[in-house]
Image (cartoon, rainbow, N blue to C red; front, top):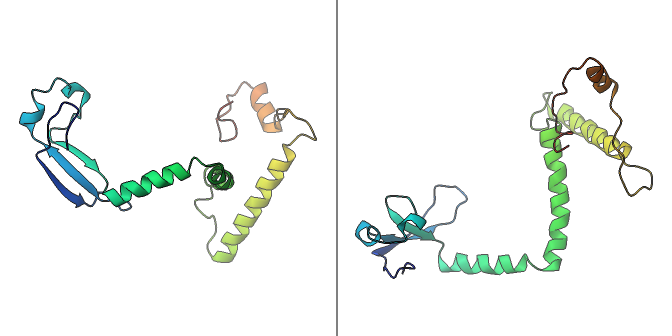
Length: 164
């Protein structure tokens, strides 16, 4: 391997497994310190004491190039739009409604919790939609929020108010 300043790597090693369980193996090209020390571009290079460059094996790199090209097609983007909507709903359940942990023991009770939470989320989504209007009107404050405002108690930020 040749760096942008014309230095040739001291050797190739690998492929090595990465520290991540799902990580792909890497081929590592090593440069010696004597090659890198007098280099004028060293500040723009890696800060690590060992000058290593890792890249995937050729078969994996070819697969990455092919998949990344496929991701630019309208057909792939349409399929992914469905998935991103589903992932948004799953994220809302996990982060907004505490669905990472069940309140009850046993599969029947856990299932009931999931079903009731899904019904509550659907009701909440439907009640927030304006009837045949293009612009969405802001939701009126709840009685609790009005009480906090009247007594000048600051409201805590929740998942519903983030970004507003």
